[in-house]
Length: 392
Image (cartoon, rainbow, N blue to C red; front, side, top):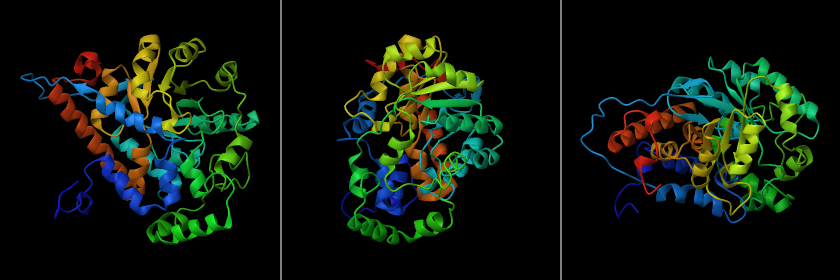
């Protein structure tokens, strides 16, 4: 790819989110890299999230005054310096020492929102205390509703402004990489040995996370599930704890427990988007769980326009899945998204270079957006529409 005699670009400074992915691949034990990098089944949707974004073409426009360009916008009443949210990432603190804290601080410096996962290593209180900017909280509903109610009480007390209910995980998608690596399913002695050797082969990760990042527990579940340590069989653990019986009727219960904004994450169908709005959602997040749940469903960029047409005038429509660059963000906004969420990119940046890596990644995306606006003749992200694209 780089030609005979040329140095691999990562001998120099990383220049893109894909560079950070490669750095993370080198640094992380394979089981952890595959967990965050992989998708479900044959990973068709995982690939489509990226491939379909690449197929979209811009209209390049010239001789327009683009000397001043604005990236700031408003999402759920919150001012953002660019239309980006750091998405909830389960196991985040396994990729870098207390990574959720690092991400919240980086988001605050960048003027954007950070969303804490139910399955974060760092608890809500630890993350919220690290940032002057209120964080969002992502909720999975447990079979014992008291668990979820406890989490919402803690999130409110920590100053969280927005509750993100993930609705596309009634059961866990079949993730072949996790099965092969022993993250899901029965763990044989051979797999345990391989995992141990793999971990030993990554001493910098061991120092930073396995030793320096303790406690490696689910910080948000310690009250509900004492000694809730990161499980060996993740899929089996989720099946035993998460509630697959949640329905639309449960949104009334959720609203009775939460007075702030509510966003539903995992919407791919316009009819579901309409139902979400009818049931009181303030935002919908077009998401296929990063290609990690049902395979062979539409990519998020393909699903986005119909959902915007269905409910874009009634609520904020956000998009999650496949976003790797400022170009991708501009494409999503041009098709009607209010903002985008990124998960894997910040996790890779944290794994590669910690908080400094997340800071740098966000600067890269900001610059890529400014360049894209300038070359499409647009001066304000709030003016983006489908006319920016060729045959949208």
